Length: 304
Length: 304
Image (cartoon, rainbow over all chains, first blue to last red; front, side, top):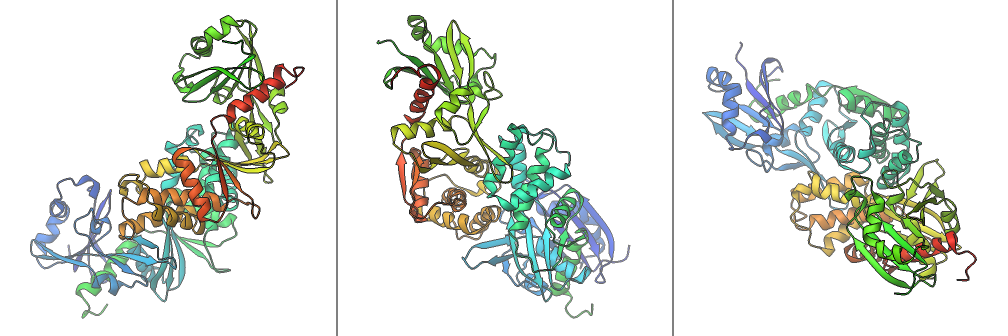
């Protein structure tokens, strides 16, 4: 293969993904393994990189490595700080943690943080690269972006920077309530029921969340909600409450950075609430963000 | 002992409590065991009553038995319906399930339900007797009452009847988030931290719930909340959100039917929100409600 300019790594809790890349964004080769941080018990992070990317490294003794994701968390390889909003690629590069490995330069990128009017902190680690990557790949300079998941992020891009964001533990609450609660014990399966989902979206917007959750239980006990529809209803409640909590400018479109079931659910809930949305697959966005960071880290003199 | 007029039983998931009572409300003898419904695997409910109350029954061949609690649920002895609000003792008696056991009359009391403007159901089973009992024992004819717990109930008494109520899964959410979540994993112990609790109460009122929960995590990761204060902060968020969702008439007092830690927390949160409250111990209220129901069931010709 052609010589890569740098190696980009997205290293999360459950997955390790690496790309041998050139500065024009081309991917020469990709590796993907299940060597997530949770699977590493001896703190031998270098061994994981050597196992997956050893051939790239030995063939390219000068190639640097840029990493993002939970690898930079307190329980990761080295704790990288959180950069305050507004965040640009240069800000991430400035506060990266620099190391060397087998003679290669290696940088672990920081996360992003924001502090609201009450002084409360919010944080992300990894999504900031997806968001900044989108500025490049989707030409989104000003946008409202939603990244559904365990901890769902609602972010605003302004002038090409990550301006602000808020996190909602919607996905985690769904898992807890579906799998561990008295309510979840009443549910029969997780088949999608569009009518029950929409009913849940309305209730999530209209009721306090911890009451809406009980209404799901009471309706099931009372026979006005079937056990097979309960999971969709609960999903609707949680997503509906989350959407109702957003201040979205009139006529603005929400960019959904999602795929699969979550993309479908959020798109349906937004449509039902009369909010336009557009779906963008998140797949390439992190890699685009890593390219921007690598340019700032090591290639500022190289024309893009 | 004197002859009881009736036997009152409060039979829940984890406890069995019985009282040999007279119509003037005197308790001649009491039994309390851990034979909750969860411990009964062979559906031999009669055996539990015979074991605890057999001496009362054999000495008083005519004495009737009135039961309340989860014994009347779908997974209990026999499913008693839910009576629509407004609920009075007579309404509960009217829809009781009647059986006989070893020649004794036996009645399983229904629960209570209410349907809101959206057509959504809410239900309780057991608390309605506490609430109606309070009308008698505490002279509360019109009141806003909060019964904290796994599924916290906010109820209104009007003209001595249970007029309406709403349930909040606050206690269950706390347990799930404290013991099973990514947030809870950051917590160190559950010691009470008054300042963190108050901060949580404010955030629970100001933020969407699923964002407030993440703020607790972010503040801990960012070092502005200590792991030892996290449990109190989370408790404050959930109780604060619940209180903020209530419409309490200006100057009205909230009657807290609670004891122990939950009584302390709710009283502190209400005081912090500027809402007057009064604490009443729930201990005798259920028994008072069972007396009212027994009078309606079997002793309407007997002067109170």
